[in-house]
Image (cartoon, rainbow, N blue to C red; front, side):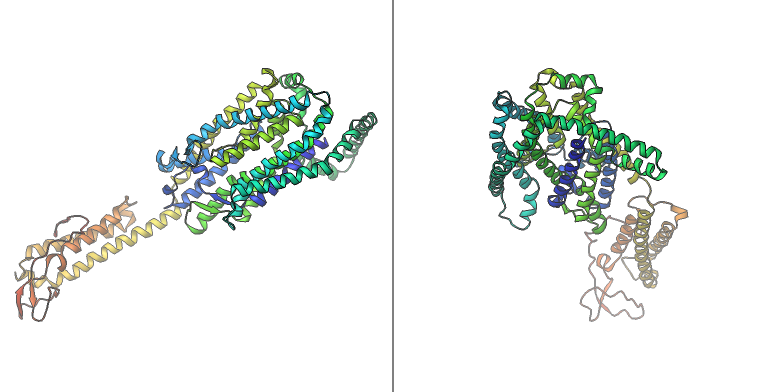
Length: 607
């Protein structure tokens, strides 16, 4: 039981540290380049709401999947959710299905490469893990002196494993952090630093780890040690029974505390190997698997733990972005009202995301661990090491070419690749089919659910949004009314001249028609501002009213119609005064053409 308790504790620590130390990188607001950001930049709050829907649906789907022992990808949950609300908001054009990108392999980014990764990444990882395990099995595990050979192989494997995982950490997460302060940080620099660190760890393994490991192995597998271990386990069982009896006979407080502890630690203390005894299919897979020297397997357990720590650390650093990214985008959009292509996640987003990782691991993590580590195929220290190393290799290579991968799918493929080496009975094929179906369903289930939730929200009337729209429409209509009133005031200054027939461009009938139009249009503006008469204005009604008002002004202004005469001392036709008793004019004004900027060719007296 101590081993089962230690595994989640180690995972929790290094998931959190990896996320906290290397997770604070510039995170794309459009996960995997799925949504076309231009569709949302005018309304970033809509994108923020979509991300809230995505995180909500993703949470429930991940919880259900983990409870059902389905190793689904959080990355694909977010991507499916983004596809869902993007389709609702902007249609198919709002989704980046496949955009050419020469830096990627395949040379496209978007939804299509992700679907391709369902097949490519597990297959590549499976082939890589099978090759690694086949090599170790042939050169070490099947030899008579496998235990001694393992001590010769361990330093070499430590160097190789360290270099791959450290290089992966640098290029996957740390590179972005370092490049923000030092542009000279390149992949070659990461490779050299990783090689130096790996060589140092290999040296420490030879000098310190191997002697300690040999001493512990000799002590563990001696007959006296095995007998003492059996007695110790029996003593622990007796002590546990006594503690249970004391709890039963103790106070209600002790019982409550005991129940609380059991509930809190349930996910940390589950024996994931119990399913071997309960499921006959799993039992047959484990029974038919090849068994190697226990001491050699024990020697490789150090390498497996080391490799697992590196992968967990990298996983925390890389995967936290898919949670911190949406959270930071929501925060930034609400705070600034803008939607940049990238946003730097604040430290509190990283902490919340990291806590989400470790809480999920500590609660339902055992279900997924049991699924891929016990139900899928038999794992031992050497097999686990091969799967972890292959996962790190494939993700590292894929990251360099921009190929979208999922650590969940890669580790599944790695375990299946090792199981295949045991023959067709080495893999739980029906359970694997169930896992693959869950990967495909993730996009559709999360996408459709997010689309429904998003549509319910964005197409529901909003009190705050309607108030803003009403203010805008009222101001536009009121401005149009003021234009009409100004025309009306000016029109009356020409009344006497029009009635006297002194204006060749506006006689009495035209003046009366224009005046009637102004009165009618002013009344229309009042009706638009009265909700009991018009209700909700249609899109564009307010702007159409303003455009007509401005067109009326343009059609009857001096700039368009022209002044009747040029008065003495006036260089241009810009004086609107008229006095029939003192016609001190000396030249006729030319009639200018209507303004080219008119929105609509409205007649001067008809609307």
